[in-house]
Image (cartoon, rainbow, N blue to C red; front, side):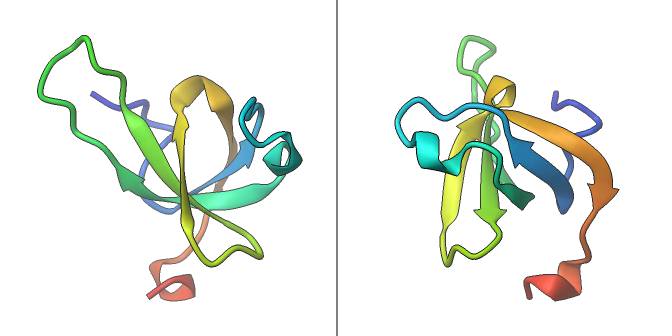
Length: 76
């Protein structure tokens, strides 16, 4: 089950990204949520970062919800 604050189109800020520290602090929206088959595999969130043309995958602890939502029409 996913965190209620992290639903599709929720706006998030990158809190940490050890592999790409230049992404830290960037805003984006959740456009994908993985559905692991077992409870041992953590959920990943696909985030379309502002000013990027691709989804970046993050674990829950790497992103923080801003409390705002984006609109579907902003992306599709």
